[in-house]
Image (cartoon, rainbow, N blue to C red; front, side, top):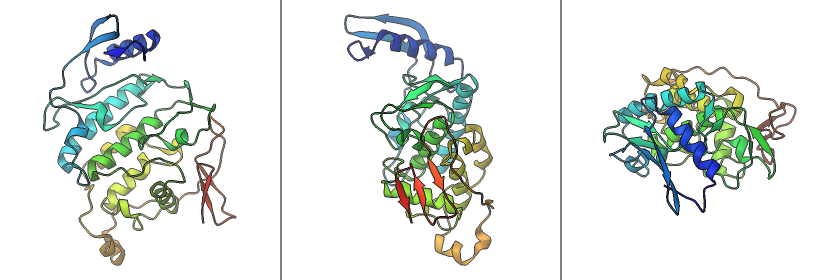
Length: 291
C-alpha cells in the first residue's frame, strides 16, 4: 500500500510494472497482476514472505552465522545479476529489502523496487545518504547528476555482506569526513591486506580481497555481483588474529597486485578518488585529505 499523498501516480505505476516484470526470477518477490486504488492508497499484491527480512535475524555486534550468510549471498547475487542483465539497477539494496521465505534462509527474495531505474538514467544528487550509498553518489553536490550503473548495487551488496557478517555498519556515510570510511579508503589505496583498519580485523584475509572488489572506491573497478561466488568456499571471518598474521605472512593466501589509482573523467563532475603520486596526500570525495 502506497499513500497517494506521498506517491505520484506515475511512480506507483512504474514500481508496479517493474515488480511484475521481474517476478519470473526465483529470488525476486512475486508480484501478482492485481492492482487497484482506494481513496487514500495505491495498492498492488505480492506474495507473503512468512519469515520476515534479513535485518530481523542479524545480531547486533555479532552478525549471523557464516554458513547461513553463504546461503543468502548466491541468491541475492543471482537476483541482482538478473536485474542488471535486464538493464535495471535496484538502487535500494539493503538488509530490510531481502525477504525470507523460511527461517534458515534456504529461500530468500529481493524486494522493494520503488527506486529501481533503467541503467544509463541520469540520477540527481540525494538529499540524504545511508551506509549503503556508494561514494560517487554521496559526493554529488546539490543539482549534480550521475549516470546510473550496476556498480551502485554492487557497493550496497558489499556493505550488506559486511553488516550481516559482523553486526556493525562499516561507516555512517561514504565520505571523507567519516573517520571509518576514510580509514577504509586509505587502506584500500595502500593495498596491504595485513594492515586492516580496526573494523576489518575480524574479516579473513581472503574476504578482505573480496570486499576490495565489491567496495572498490572507483566505481568502474567494482566486480559484478556474481563474482562473489569465487569466494564462497573461503573463510570470511578471521580465525587467526591479525598480530599472528603479521608475524607469519605465510598465513596470507590472497595475493593482491598493487595498481595506481588516478583521477579521470567520470559521468559526472565528481571524482571519488584523486591520487597524485607527486604529493604525499590522498583526496577522498574531492573534499578531505589524508596525509
